[in-house]
Image 1 (cartoon, rainbow, N blue to C red):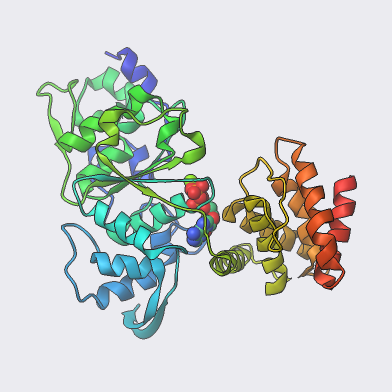
Image 2 (spheres, protein in one colour):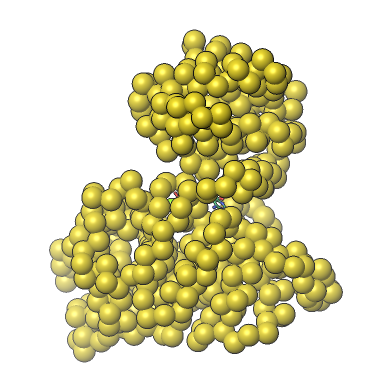
Length: 416
Ligand SMILES: Nc1ncnc2c1ncn2[C@@H]1O[C@H](COP(=O)(O)OP(=O)(O)O)[C@@H](O)[C@H]1O
Ligand SMILES: [Mg+2]
């Protein structure tokens, strides 16, 4: 008989489950860590975006073949190799698809490497990991790469929202089959959590503080008992987690206070704060690398000169800090001027230059997209941008043609 619980449970809203979590059979529920979970992502590049373990399969394989340290139970790589995968390292020689190949280990996450070390150590411990920081600081990005390197599957993910329910975190039922056959293990629809537990993999819980506290608390038993009880089944079995299971959650520090973590849950997480990139050069490297990767993904033939991207990064940094390099105080906009937003702005500028220009990104293309990045919900932020153009841009424009072009275009964009 379908209970209230089962009737709700068919909906999967708020859960970005891996394909194996979407189907309700026991066999499929067991799949997970050993295979990349995104259907079709591995084959012919026909998806818009591949999960990290597919996109960087060669690098992961090269690190595995060159492994010199021991990995914790169920981990694919040793903590040292996971760190190298994330922060980059020297080129390795490995046999890839039967051929000896030189594989460059690229840097994925830019910033303080000790932050990444602490995150890795936490995942090898009893405690779960909570990455906290401003929006756009690369929390989800780091979480995806950590999961890819540690268990080869970054797709066991729950997206926390106000609508996330306990069933999304634990399990639900295939209602039609429960009506026909009753409660059996085969009729249980596992959540990404249960799939991660069964395969000793990592669960990624995005934006955990968006979930209401009662729902968050469903995780307490998962983290403390490392098991999920299924009282609907005759023997009330417990589904136990295999070694290697752990949780990487992310939380937005701007959301804090919306649904703070309960004390019980806080105790089970190690908090790792992800700062906004402090160093200008590092931020420039992120913007350059990610913009070029995204342009490749879109097959975009536009040309973006590094000075133009650096100009964009400078505008973002100065507005974020409320101060120019020369020490002029500036009105900070209400929007988070994150690195991620700068990357988005650069990509939009490249698209604009490619489709409506001659394919070369100019300061004017940046200016056009800046207004959309800076002014989101608060029209008052237009004043910040206008002030920036007048106080900072004009002065620089007197000496530097790149700044002059940016300012002239900003003036036009701000008039519209
Ligand atoms: N420190 C960083 N290193 C590498 N990429 C970063 C960094 N910060 C932001 N990014 C880029 O910004 C984009 C968005 O980051 P995301 O992980 O979604 O942010 P968050 O989850 O913190 O809101 C990603 O594509 C990522 O490449
Ligand atoms: Mg995120």
